[in-house]
Length: 248
Image 1 (spheres, helix red, strand yellow):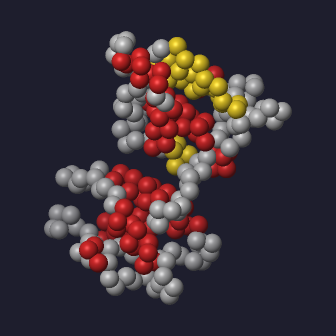
Image 2 (image 1 turned 90 degrees about the vertical axis):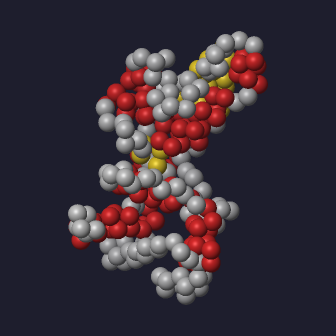
Image 3 (image 1 turned 135 degrees about the vertical axis):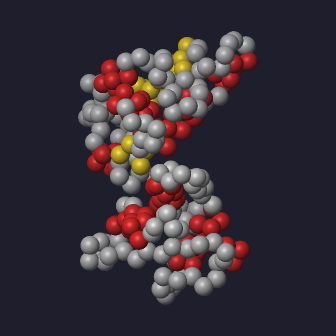
């Protein structure tokens, strides 16, 4: 993979992406990851290449192409062609390999400008296919949604992405950005005993517009609908049918 920040990392260096993806499914159950550093020459660039985890940082950055809640890859709105989706799949596979639970061994080979990492099951463990289904992904690649951040990080990431995808469909509407303070404040009030769906005092965020959604407990008795789907966001966006944009 190249060291650039463009989503199509590695496309020029790996002309047959489909073949490479197939090659990831080795009979040993191991998975190879590739990184190509494009520091632009020798000297200082080679020093950075040999003394910093450039490849690992790049592989981890591909988490933006993976949805923890569904175990499926996420394609940017600009990615519509099958060939481009293969590139995203290839890069998402790199991120998932870093976290895959059944891997227990890893080794690296370095020859500037390339790094190759091989991730394998523990010694004696049965080989497992590296071509993984969403169910396999969901079970083996997880994120701590709450942790010590005091807000649901997984849901916020997915909801902000969904909102911006819809906003992009409307002329002159800019992307929303996530605000940690607002998320923690709202979650603090929601976690209080007796929360009834209303928050009376948001302090410095009182001027913000708030939307509230209550899930259908008949359809989703275990709360999975509201926490692991775009149910709320889709319901809010459905309100467009009641709005005449020509009149405001």
